[in-house]
Image 1 (cartoon, rainbow, N blue to C red):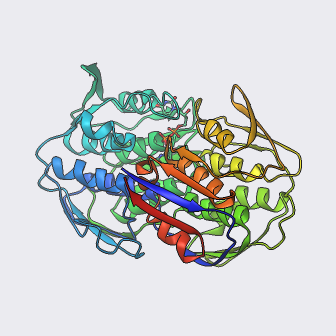
Image 2 (image 1 turned 90 degrees about the vertical axis):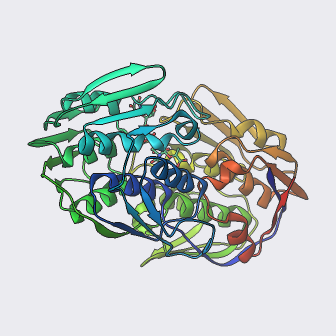
Length: 428
Ligand code: EPU
């Protein structure tokens, strides 16, 4: 098991190039199931979660090319070609779904194209119970027969039929699953209270380029007119806004001047406005964002509340909490998406942070000089917050269980070393 050793209190200078978005690449790969043509994806990040999706597709008989090893790791523009014409099973087994919940994204495409899917129920995870009831209800509304047996959801449908689906809660992968399923349904599907994340818009663009008829992606009502078949496509994966946000916060936390390149500043409005409120200089132009913090003065403490896009993303909550230990007063952080997403608090406290948690609210007292310690990553974004803490802390921080980090950050230690961080990966 690898760990990261970080020698803190070095300012960061230079450019970090952002990789393709994990949460755009995963549905883009699942969407390939909807066609027998080649789906060619450019800028796919090399990440453990993407590797899991490749394994899942290959286990079903899908052919993938260009993603066989780590060649090109850290090199933006890695291409993957997927051809699903040889699919011979419609099952996503427990051993893969348990390592990556996003495996559930094959459900909608499998039912739409083959009329059947058997997908392991993901169960709870480190950040919450995360049910998939809304995915299942949506497919049932499209006319599918759904049963749950032995921990698996079995979905069958001769031909899906368009319907109006109103999500009780905004769900990102739920919206993606239903949008993909509806592309091959008979008639019109309307999704209300749809998720509006850029990854939804990107998936809709891909499906449209495959021949789907979709309007309204990026708003809370998406209309899909079913078509008989889809064809292959070539698609660029959008930059990872959460990776970009993580480096923006890291640069602000450590101090210095960093350009975060190959990103879309428009996808990060909520974060950038909070950074400005905290007193950080951030300027977004074209496809890059420059972050500057020259002085070591305390930042202004600010409050954040996570909620669906375009509001403050839950996937940046942990990282922002670490930054708020450098506030001049008290910052209140309210998590509204996942019920258990404060696992990093206990580790940050071991580094000297003063954070109190009451239900879904964390109260962060600032003016803390963090101290290096041995700490443990608990989930993907929590891991990133601990690395950021290590960059700010006195002396040495050792972050273990970084396999969580490898699920969603492409060569993070290399990207950070390039801008002056003293960080190395060691095998234990
Ligand atoms: N929910 C339900 N029932 C459902 C689906 C969702 O109750 O059927 C609830 C969830 O429990 C949660 C809320 O709805 O309280 C929102 O969850 P959502 O379905 O939007 O989350 P997701 O689709 O499972 C995606 C990202 C997550 C990100 C969330 C929220 C992917 C592959 N994953 O998850 O990314 O946190 O949206 O933005 O797109 C990460 O990258 O670290 C990560 C966890």
